[in-house]
Image (cartoon, rainbow, N blue to C red; front, side, top):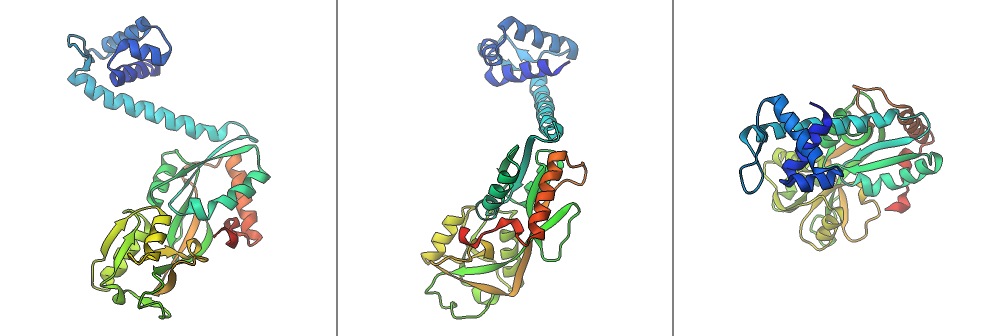
Length: 303
């Protein structure tokens, strides 16, 4: 069998029609039919039930569809991965970031990188959390990613970009606004806004509440930072947010937590593959930023 046969089979199974599949594939309908028939002959099974009014897969066809999709997906990932080696001076870097990084840490970095290396295109992908960034690095979908690390945590193939701390965000008229630091034991009756499961913010909020002897009452789970800020400002709930995302916020108060919740933001890449020439150029650029004390090119004015 070949990839062309798998692509034809997958397209026909998706559209449930040989003629429509041929139109999408920009080939003749007989070509599609012959390719599928040759595949069935090689596999020694019938993949499509052609006796039905509406074309459908046989039991064997449904199982083979799973294998065909996986093969085609793997081919796509391999093609993306190989883009890293398509020349020393031009190409695409696939870059993954968790929530908040895209809005608050990435823009100025991107502007500086693009002005220095206009021949390199960055394909930015927002991931649900640091775990997804790691997964996409290992399967070859991403070349670089930014992740959150616990204070003191180290990763192979990573560079620390920024050390930061989570603060408790609360309404301006909250009874705790005059405290110097906030202990989670004083938050037992509060409503919380959490980011989705798997994010560091979600994990650390639930963990700190558990250490204080309670399970947090969750008002909302969202990855939208503006929504979190607006709800806190309107006295709906409290939430933990990193200092870099709230440093100049005026509509609500934010206070350090006792004991502090410190973390790092790190640039990382897969330890299972060598960096491409353009990947090495990005890494060198980041190292120069850090050497110049311009970590991630963050501008306080951005906030």
